Length: 159
Image (cartoon, rainbow, N blue to C red; front, side, top):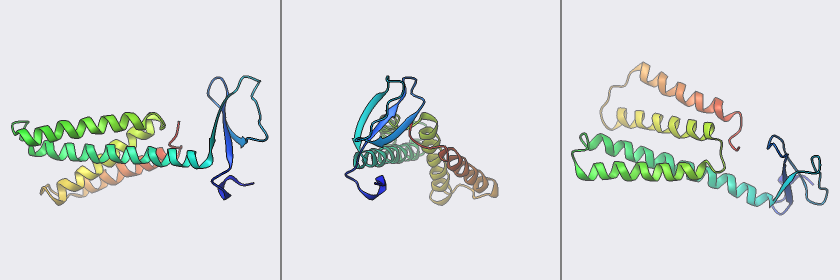
């Protein structure tokens, strides 16, 4: 049965002792690598939920970082209390959520998405809402950041 056809199919995720090789095989037909494999059995639905949560926490980290950076702009060098507290809270939440994301996503991919999306969003906020200059160089730079994140994601997001 194709795993994509049913969310109730149980699969075993297998890693060799070095952690190099992962395979998904039906639970009824287990395969062992050199008799020393580690098994982690989860339903297909649970794996899908894990991937969704991974991207949800990463999205929250990106949003918190954007809000923290925007608040920093209005803190006037941390001389205004509320924007300064908003900056600290935004970055605290961003790093907590990013740390949670790193439990299930490779650090290179997570950081590329987090920093790239944050950079692109802050550049757009600066140009649209704060009155920063819109130049061809800025637009090309943002597009290159986005392209870099896409290229890094082609290698896969989970670790």
